[in-house]
Length: 465
Ligand code: GDP
Ligand code: ZN
Image (cartoon, rainbow, N blue to C red; front, side, top):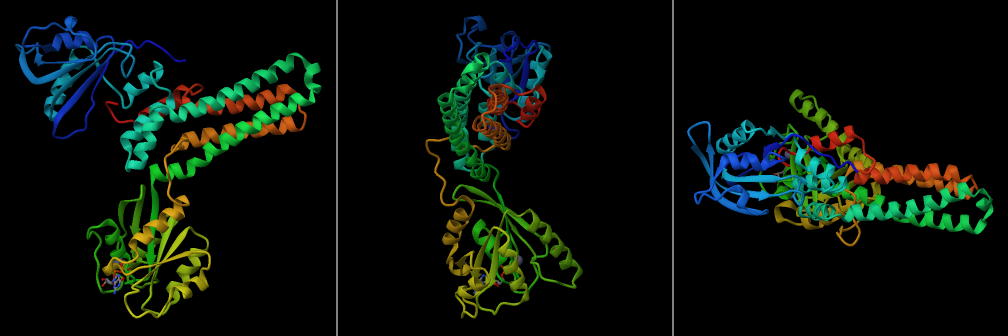
């Protein structure tokens, strides 16, 4: 492991900027307790050495350089190493949650010898001191950044070690296999042991089945945490803005009777059954001479490139025109749902007509003013993105691009190892492939991760975590 001793003490405001009931200045390192002893006064005259670990004590933060001015009334949290978040001594000043107060307390802490922490530095120390593995440390950031209850659930389970346990058990099985294969390097006569190679192959294939199952969760996992760009496309006046408004539940986009009024693209993020959808309404992909609208049209083409799911809208009360036919063409090669809107009006274009042009796509009929079809649309969106509803169950879900990539490497290495075994290659070659696979798995929990990758990961954290 990396376990190491840091010689500086770090401090940061650990709570969000802005007015709040409380705000916390967190300090970690060898100087944490001496700094608290210098700045904190208990009205009962309790000294810090009398306080036991993991307790809160009422008192004041005072400025010893300014005739003991009272800076704030606080609760002081004291946690002695090693059973703390970072593995170091930690003190937390629970202050009143105003930025001026918190900045004043942080300033005093820094004057007393601490350094302002970099983003994620507390968690980085937790990792380097072995309090968390890397996947758990990343789960902390994912938990904080959760946009939906589903991503929160996945993150809190990863923080508890659910993903790490699975990865570690795959590693253990591969390490055992590697040990066995390395043993046969030393005893080459056993190369010819056919039964042995068959057993090794069986083990490797069994590990691969489980590894692939884990890797397969990444597509859905990333949809849940990162969300999906969804573009709403259709000819002017088909009801794009109305749909966006109905899904968002507020009148954000401008709805008008004149075709082409949604000049700009409008974006909203909504939560559809646990999936964050970044909805984009566009000016439509109609050809136009109007310069202002032309710009909107350009932008909507860019939106089309960025979109991972298309909601293509058609007007049931009108015959299909060229723009509609063009959209149906677009739908063929994309992940798309067809929406037949305005079914409350006399129908000129039934859904069967859309299906003639796009037999493989789903059609949802809607009448937005009557709230008709919106729930069905949400269900269809989930089916399209996740193949049904995603349940957070027994097995962990990969939500992070880095983990996905590491698993891909691990799988590739294992693939080569299996091929080598199948082709009767010498055990030292099989061992090389297995080590690649083990390194990939090790990257996820941070066993084999380099310093610059660690820096990159932790720099994306917020300050004070
Ligand atoms: P956009 O140009 O595609 O954004 O279309 P809008 O959302 O601005 O809607 C154009 C007009 O169609 C507005 O008057 C809406 O109220 C109306 N509209 C939208 N959806 C429906 C629907 O399902 N039924 C009916 N009857 N009118 C609708
Ligand atoms: Zn519009």
